[in-house]
Amino acid sequence: MAANDGSDWQRVLARISKITGARPIIRPGSLEPLLLELEEGKLDLVVGARLDAKSPWMKRLTIGPPLGEKADSPTAERLVTRNGENAWIMLVHGAIKAESGR
Image (tube, rainbow, N blue to C red):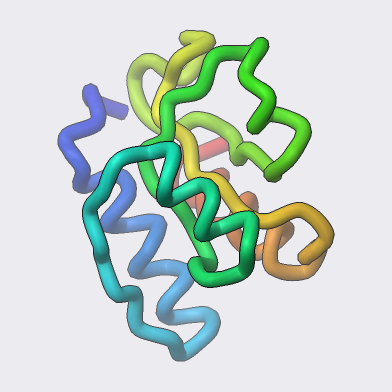
């Protein structure tokens, strides 16, 4: 895929929306507060997170597979979900893989 201009994530969100019947509400913000809200269950997803492999968030949340041209980069954009919601995590990861052609 081409470099991520946001359209990759829009396609992933559209696929998730089609499967679940839910409509995403996009709320921009700084990464750390959004991840805290995700961990607390106030959000379902954080889109476009760039996390270092040593970040404590790597164990506290479920970090999805990367999407886009820089997928092999350790700081590639990723979609993040709460730990413990296995069916939701599988659905989200499946949507990412389907849209990235993997």
